[in-house]
Image (cartoon, rainbow, N blue to C red; front, side, top):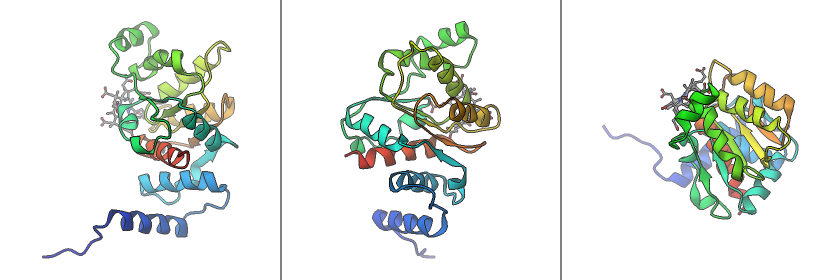
Length: 209
Ligand SMILES: C/C1=C2N=C(/C=C3N=C(/C(C)=C4\N[C@@](C)([C@@H]5N=C1[C@](C)(CCC(=O)O)[C@H]5CC(=O)O)[C@@](C)(CC(=O)O)[C@@H]4CCC(=O)O)[C@@](C)(CC(=O)O)[C@@H]\3CCC(=O)O)C(C)(C)[C@@H]/2CCC(=O)O
């Protein structure tokens, strides 16, 4: 039996974004933030997500400026780093996930933490002015906050903090929002994940061109 469905990629996107803009409550976001939140809703297929999104004033601008200036993007998981659309990046920016570095298992054992958290220790040399995207591991976000408590630790330009799940996700994002070490974007509560996070990166990169 023949199925009727849309096969034009551009038309699918246009229809999706029109649906989201018709159904979601986007009034509290400025134009730059709205573009990012729409893509996050799109990735999750979840109108209503916008109610849980918090964006610090100037976060989108700071992240875009960083990318335009050639900053790297550090990601906690390969599901995040692999999702970044390279052709959107304004300065052929490096997209880095250190999770599989051979040093990481020993570091995790030494620090008594997860591999996701320990992998962030390898970010230090290039962390200054970078865009950080945590889309999976709550322990990675907590570890980043611990690193940034040290005034000598290099500071990223902006943080996308959207780890997902039932253990530590809500708490790590609340801690990021409260500590406010640099302008951040979070999804409150258990919701989050790699797809939502990479959608935010791709939206930020799009207008930085
Ligand atoms: C406790 C962990 C959680 N993982 C989640 C959700 C997903 N994780 C996937 C995959 C493939 C990976 N998760 C690891 C990061 C792995 N996950 C953990 C850890 C045990 C601890 C992290 C933490 O609590 O902060 C973590 C291992 C570690 O030592 O750091 C991963 C590295 C495991 C591995 O394959 O070795 C791996 C990352 C792959 C990558 O690089 O992209 C899932 C696809 C689940 C699955 O495999 O079935 C899924 C993806 C979710 C997403 O959208 O990103 C939670 C829910 C975040 C959970 C932490 C909280 C909880 O409630 O349990």
